[in-house]
Image (cartoon, rainbow, N blue to C red; front, side, top):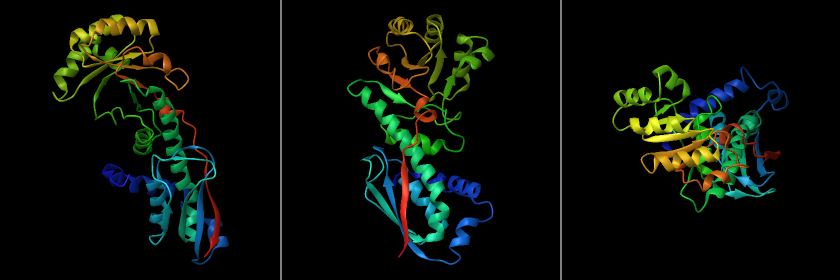
Length: 284
């Protein structure tokens, strides 16, 4: 995480927005019970097994509230932790610890939940050539954190946003007037370094897309039989991604098909949070 320059360049602004959402003028409860500065310590405790992601973000929440805060972690992002593990200890102004607790935990629980869920699926793909991809189905203003968590969990990032790559979906095809037209227009407009990916729902669309020169074909919501037919027809002339309601429960049926990528919106939109608590706060 410390080497993730993009995260560091973007995290502070987003974290501050989250803190302002939670503290519009003051933390009334904390100011009532803690009117003056008091150094304190609290423990970050894991309450279920999982994969950690977002420790830097957790730490940064408190640093933005109290520059003198000190966090000591016993694990790093990507580590497997067990229920009951002491993840780390935070020492600093009790007021900052109380005011930042929920925001910091929201980030860490959400990111660790995504990393844990992603890892459970990525393990099913071990030994195959298939790469597990995320999508743009992310929480608004949380994409950079959620996509980072996917990588920590063993997945790969699809395009980050609409400026990051060409992906012609059903409505783009409709706007262009057809599969062939959409591919040719994209190849004409996009920089030559950009690959052209197109979403196909039928084998006929796949044939038209490949003949038009698409670089990547996404087999979207097809049956296994339809995908086998499409893959046989493509015969290495384009990279292949399959997508459409892919989850941990059904992904195994796609592994042996011979696709290059499997994308799943569930990695970010359906991963449950990981239960982590900040406990045992006391003055020191």
